[in-house]
Image (cartoon, rainbow, N blue to C red; front, side, top):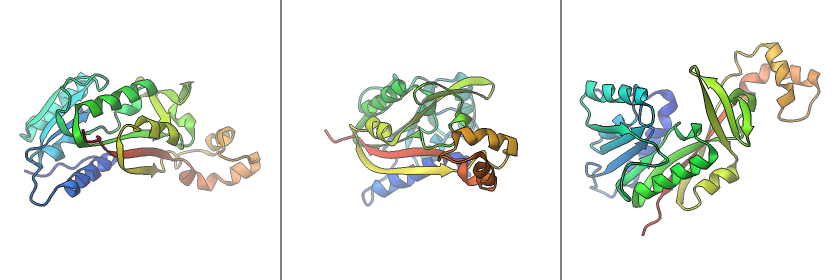
Length: 245
């Protein structure tokens, strides 16, 4: 069986697998471990790389369409992945069910209040001492208008894939508060320079209103060659431990 190759935007999930391996005691195997994905749908579900390690893999997704794609992939490569419809704000598993829990690019569409609820649920279904991986969009993204109209503080709405969707963006203080009841093993900021290459001079001119530092319009237009470096998507990732009982 060929190993599953994730999409480039899921490389952080592969790093979580590396951290799981690093946490094992000598001679310890993953075959008796259970892992859970909040938002497991899609044509190439990251759960596959954990199932290939012999882990008991479970996941939920609120979208039946995305769930069907994940099930088709698992069936095609004959991987035992347990997938069901579900909402990460009310995870359909008992307390302390899993050794590992993660989400990737799923919580970003929740409201800020619902994000906190989902993280509480992830902690609930995780065993004491278990590890979790999750992330939020940072308010250090620029320009913020790329993420739509702000309707509530830090919550922006835009049309994506034909549907209007929310993106919640968090300051560092807000992100840290979300995981204040966990033991933080490590924290990472991933910066992707996206969206700048295709900007016309007129589009760059319109972004003068969002310039990160005060400058004249002439100064701003002189920075047009820097547009690729200035446009950025920033994601804050946490590797967490549920406090031992």
